[in-house]
Image (cartoon, rainbow, N blue to C red; front, side, top):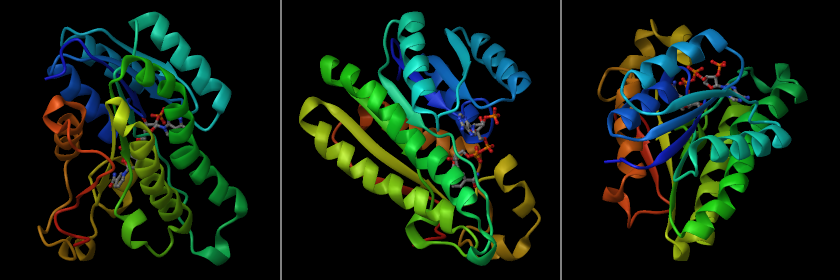
Length: 244
Ligand code: NAP
């Protein structure tokens, strides 16, 4: 489905991002993925992808740093010859109730989750305009749609991604570029490890289970492929019915 395409996936070394990289690679895409600092995990993911027979490379880059995103996209274009798909998946949490939440906690989460996505979009924007094609997929969260106590910073960043997605979609719709968001509920990864044993949370999900990283990857594949060419500015929940 993605043969001949180059996909850039932020936070592609672990969790949902790694599952997206793997499924995209299985579908023929070459993969440039970004990670924050866990080099060992990034090297493991890179070899796994290379073993699938595609070109793959991990780049250490803090998406919250505009200059680093500019440099890394330049490097990726030099290495891969172009970019056709961008998945803004890198994200962090710093959960606390507002009285305990420091301004730095708020800024760090918004800088990574929201501004990081803006910086990456800014870098691929001229490329996508020029080639009159491209797919941008932003990984939001149900927390950005319905809010969550203890996640004011995270929910604000993920709600911001919804506005960013729709604005980018409107700017680029007539140029053949689609921009959509995915809003996962609870997906079993390092990020949700602390919740994993909480039966109460599971019972609040109509499907009574956490999602799998592959569930999200399959939706990302659809949005990255030409099967979704007439869909833009959409936010798709993938949450076992939690936020309906
Ligand atoms: P994860 O397992 O914690 O992995 C996070 C990934 O992002 C890692 O590859 C990490 O790199 C990278 N990263 C973190 N900060 C970065 C930065 N500043 N610059 C570049 N890369 C950075 O996370 P996940 O659970 O897979 O979540 C992925 C996305 O889905 C996030 O945006 C998250 O908010 C969203 N989401 C997750 C869930 C869920 O239930 N898991 C639900 C809704 C939405 P290192 O390995 O180097 O640290």
